[in-house]
Image 1: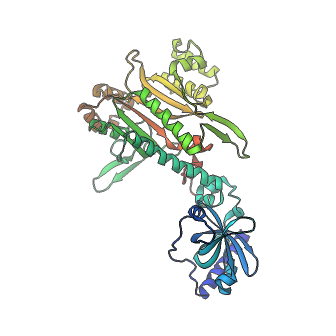
Image 2: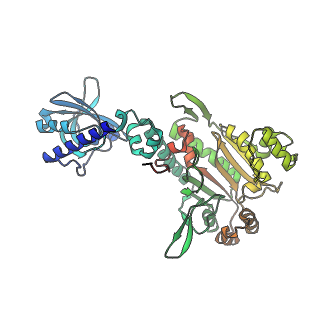
Amino acid sequence: MDDENELIAQRREKLEKLRAKGVEPFGAAFETSGDIAAVREKFKEGETLRAAGRITAHRDMGKSHFVDLRDATGRIQIYVHAKEVGVEVVDLFQLLDLGDFIGVEGECFLTKTGEPTLKVRKLEVLSKSLRPLPEKWHGLQDVETRYRQRYLDLVTSEQSREVFAKRIAILRETRRFFEERGFLEVETPILQTVAGGAAAQPFQTRHKALGLDLYLRIAPELYLKRLLVGGFNKVFELNRNFRNEGISRRHNPEFTMLEAYWAYADFEKMADLVEELICHLGQTVCGSLQIEHRDAEGKVTRTIDLKRPWRRARYVDLVRDAAGKDWFELTSEQRRERAKELDVEILPQLADFEVTQHVFEKLIEEKTFDPLFVTHCPKELVPLAKQNREDESLVDVFELIINGVEIAPGYTELNDPDVQRRRLLEQAGEETQKIDEEFLLALEHGMPPAGGFGLGIDRLAMLLTGAESIRDVILFPLLKPRRG
């Protein structure tokens, strides 16, 4: 800490010396020829270009200096010589540090080693960095610091920059995918009077002017279905959801979801659509349908194969294969005993269908890495889906599992308002105030048959980037306040 304080003191001393020379250390706007990647693309010997960025390397040769400038798009070398800019500008480099921002105008030339370089004619100091950047550009080693000070992680880690570039590309390509297929991108309320569309604990707030309790949404589903009632046949929303629940490597209280609804479709069409979307993203964002996951040392630990067609299997068949052919013929108590034999922990308060679901999650979901559509689930698990016509205990749904987690549920949507009311009442139990009467009112005006699905963007980003924690794909994940 003493060394860091000394470095900060030295930088502040240089700050004052710059001002004493009449140089503003936090400069004004600077017109460039584009970001550094664009400058490299435009590079042509003899051309004059303008670039700006952080100083990331500095080789002092007395009257001349070779300096690397970097931004999020790349790096370019600049060459500063007293003959071109004058001794005073060269002397400025005694007051500059790694991490400072400068802007330059210069002539393009190639060094003897073939390195594209700008021979500087004009130079401006744009921002003085008062704290040293970590690890001399080798990246942050402390994981919590990477999350808490993401800006330093992005500055020092090319790998982190690549992860978030892919996440940005995922969102961009997702929008393009749906728009090309005639879907309309819509926005629905984040503040809601009833937190519906999923079974989750919401965050609560209060609107003072209306004297109204409100909730941050846990899902946009009930509003998107209102749009089907209103005649929008294909809609999607890339939305932020909030759930006041635990944090883990696969859960963050604030997360991004894609939800899409398609009138006159069903869960099988939606499964086809999800499969097509993720394969499109794999190919366009990653350049391959073989997605490698690596450990901290860079060794490949798993390769996920997205090649189509993806496997589809019924929920009950998968459970029987994992827990015994007679699983559904057992009594409730016998199922608990069998679960214990299978090393699946079952809490006493769990309902019988939840016992089966725990077995499914531990023995099937967590061990499935290549894509699997699990279809025809028990109706208790999915109160917003349409019942199967051949077996009333099941609903027409899929749960897409990849990389050991559910990444996308999809349904043939329930559009019978009376059945929907009964299902929501069963889910709410004594808490009937959780029933969204406005949604039920909309259904009573008539909603067409439809298919819908939700896709977790954060988990999808983990899949396509090989990240092992959701915090690695969220720019600013929620963390406990820093101590001290």
